[in-house]
Amino acid sequence: MLRLATAVLVLLAGQVTAAPGDQMSPAIQAMKAGIICAPLVIGTNPAPDTVAGVTNIVEGDPQFISNGRQVPAVLGIGFGVKAQAAGGADLYDVTVTVTHPPMGDAGIIRQTYPTAISGTDLSLILYQFDFEYELVQGPWTIEAAQQGNVILYVEFEVVAPQMVPQLATVCGFENLLS
Image (cartoon, rainbow, N blue to C red; front, side, top):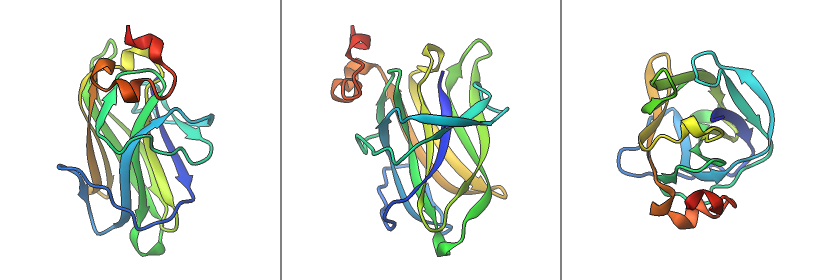
């Protein structure tokens, strides 16, 4: 089941890795986007405006295995953003919106959930492939907004595993490449 995850991570701030199409408002001090292997899930939060109905709470500091934006459509792969709010104050009432090609029986193309972004540490906003129905290829975006103002926006493209075999195999899911 592909679930959305949010976790606060203790990392050094001040990093920005941008790709064409990325946006970061002055409300964000640091942002880094990339791809990860599935971290340990230690709980969930209700998220009724998502296909899964929950977001994952993950343990630790999952490291990006790539800062690339081509994500292999493989179970256990996640992708997203680590961001820190500017000025040392936490941002509350942040709405994350993930858009993607039609997913599931209902053809859902947009999922939203609430979160906060730390002003002292990097916070993780993550989408992880947990179920086959989530492996929809095409453009994906992750956007965070506060009071209707976009504070960060990143683009990814989910592709066939054969297009990025070095990423598809790094997490131990080679059997899905046949």
